[in-house]
Image 1 (cartoon, rainbow, N blue to C red):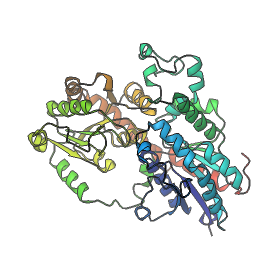
Image 2 (cartoon, rainbow, N blue to C red):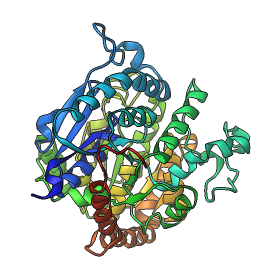
Image 3 (cartoon, rainbow, N blue to C red):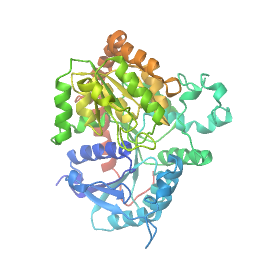
Length: 463
């Protein structure tokens, strides 16, 4: 029997869509290579196991025995993201250790633990105690991780905390980044942000390997920079979704069909697809400026307005009376779409995005130009690389965003500059395809990763 058939991989994602989805894609890749996979998942934001029949799921309870889950209380929902991550790590540190010990003691031979980088030191201590090697999945790009790793230097050089007077200043140690591109977020607990980042970097550095959802031809220089500073083995095997897209049939629901039918009626490369991810929030004023900018551009648009995107509202009630009816078939508001399917549709000509890493890769893989409006952390780094390094998008900052500027940018990226940017997009799309081919770098790294985890002695935690 193949050795990997009896060596299980345990995976521990962070319970946010931008982190959970690439972990599930990676789980499919491992499963396709013959490994049984068990997903340990927090009781907060727990997935529906029936949607992922290939894997076993174990729910980790919160540590507030006999009491209410602190992550479902009203005050938790109003926290900033840094405070929420602190609470998340506190809530599940001990119960994760117990759950991991139960899995390891269950009689099956463990291959390794694959944990999200943000769990960091939580999983490091737990894995050492039960004698399982730990591999880390980093859900950001390599360039942004290198910026995170440089936080001590950036603080010493007084780039951090960011000062408004220096926003457009070049960070000479990290070109092409400007001060405003550094991967921070607004928080009431800035020192906690530095602790989270430091734990993430140290936890990655002490692991038995790092898996990246990126590919060599996209981030070659950043990978070289990382290798020069860290000794841990790295495996850039992305784009994950292109490995796993043919491993499971795509199940379409009624909303998917409605969206596809609408796209089918649009001209090729005419639609501006708009989505700002699963975590960002915007003010009602921003929402209205975006809506009027889209309308006035006279370009067909598909906008994912998820419930809760606009602070203080449920969905579209902030729009003026008759706005949606006036647009008619020219624009479409939806609560959710299958983004991979939308970006692959021939009608989509541009993607107005928050520049999350998953969205960035998905757009690159379909050759779709991007309009970049980053909101926090690594999204700022991704946007700078999209615009100035890969030259596959155009910048539209939130600080300068009004309906006239939006209209101008939408017209330029779809009509005037679109062909030049699209040409660069198609070149990167080709490179991604080559990396995934049999002799491509991502495929070679994947073979190396499989051999690497199979080489672990499950009872030897020495690096």
